[in-house]
Image 1 (tube, helix red, strand yellow):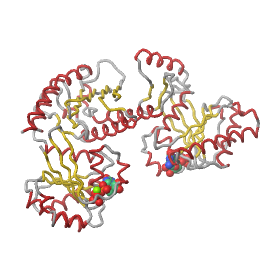
Image 2 (cartoon, chains in turn red, yellow):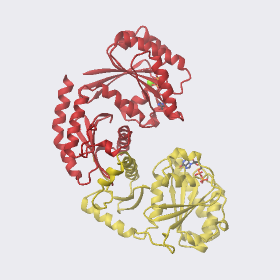
Image 3 (cartoon, each protein chain N blue to C red):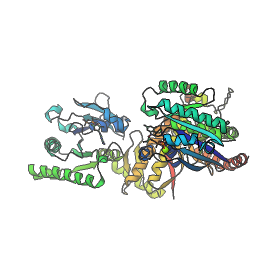
Image 4 (cartoon, helix red, strand yellow):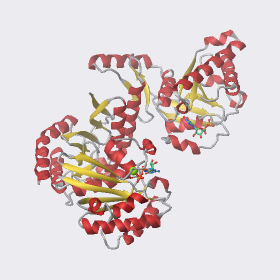
Length: 312
Length: 275
Ligand SMILES: Nc1nc2c(ncn2[C@@H]2O[C@H](COP(=O)(O)OP(=O)(O)OP(=O)(O)O)[C@@H](O)[C@H]2O)c(=O)[nH]1
Ligand SMILES: Nc1nc2c(ncn2[C@@H]2O[C@H](COP(=O)(O)OP(=O)(O)O)[C@@H](O)[C@H]2O)c(=O)[nH]1
Ligand SMILES: [Mg+2]
């Protein structure tokens, strides 16, 4: 199954940079060497095996934008699964940016009315009062979108915010995300785990997590009870990507992790061909080896699950 | 490795004197090593104008004296015999007279008061230069210090001087400081021997014993330290330290209920496979 992802926004807003961070595992420090993208750079990224993300990184210089909106209009805007529109938070031409944005919304409405729309207010590392700035931008952008449903994120390539935004975006493209979540919850219960998280293998974006049950169950499967850090998913993605990068500098391939810390144990290991799983356990009586064994035994089930739902 | 009780029940701290001209990077070094300051933020540190004593609890309790650039031996207000090590920081681009005169002045005084003091030189901000120039400047600095000491008296050559290339922007600083620390740990030979045995029995190619919070290694086995491997271990500890706070239970009730039955020390482990 193929999903077309349009990556649009003014030149220099950071589209190619985020693509190279998420999909090519390049460090943020190297993005300053990227040249402006000429026309459209298309990439096929295999994501979760059968799901193929067809990324259209659309160079943002005016001449290209004008052509996307006129002669190339139907090619660009048809069959779009998701459009990600990137705004540089410090843009000095916000008026023009918004005008192009509105035109792109028109194009989508005409050719792919069902497409999901995500707006990234990018380079947030450059501003001081992040919360306030984002709130204001969010309000403006929602107003500009004139009733079209959009989701706004503040992002930066220098912290975990980029992983949060992209995880949410790809989550909408995975047809069986809810089913995966349900099975992860069952698996977490079987392991006496506080939480289980499933990552895509190359990007380390979060695909699904076990639920927090709303019942006042007495089982240890209650993340609410532990009040874990709300930014943990995206920060885990970022930390592991950074460590994978450190390993690659030594030409070592990252394989798995077992962390026995004072308050919890975490095991990160391959789940299926295309995913990694992380099991977090707070109960000190659960042995790490048991967690590994459980992951091993869950593998077949998850391979099946993934196969089933993706062909549909 | 137990901290010894001092006279008033306080711990006895090993004292280290940190010297160098102003803007050489002394305060940056301390803050990056012990206060988790991101290297880029060192840019905003203010110049140190009076002696500041910092206490840090690594594997041994330390007291490091951060001194202003223009300090003299008299200004110290105490004898050099108080200190176990003297670290002198030189900006790698500064191959000229001034810092070297300052260093030589202190070495001579130390030779008089405390001939056993460990003399360490951090040739700092090394990331700013290309490899070739870097080694050339390093060599020049070393040569000039030796020449100046020989001029004063041939004896000084006997006192070994350890030079390290360092930068706050990579793990070279951690490695250099680890080596400084090794000379101060009395039980080092036993620890090294234990690690040798560990490597032999587990067929591990390399073993480091780390102080997790500061990411300094306390000891390693007899095989040579490969810088890349050391860097990877530091990166790993950095990740581990960040992970701890992400999944740590913040709720007091859950935390007490799930306390381990016996106090166990954290045993971080990792594995990665070679291809
Ligand atoms: N401070 C900061 N700079 C960023 C961030 N993301 C990207 N940049 C910088 O922005 C510059 C432009 O990035 P690109 O990714 O080439 O921009 P683009 O949107 O692909 O531009 P076109 O291809 O011309 O449309 C680069 O120098 C990046 O290093 C960010 O989050 N923060
Ligand atoms: N390039 C580079 N700059 C450094 C390094 N360490 C410190 N600096 C910079 O050197 C300047 C002076 O540092 P500071 O610690 O205040 O020096 P002090 O006066 O010796 O305490 C600051 O601007 C630091 O950012 C380094 O390893 N590399
Ligand atoms: Mg580009």
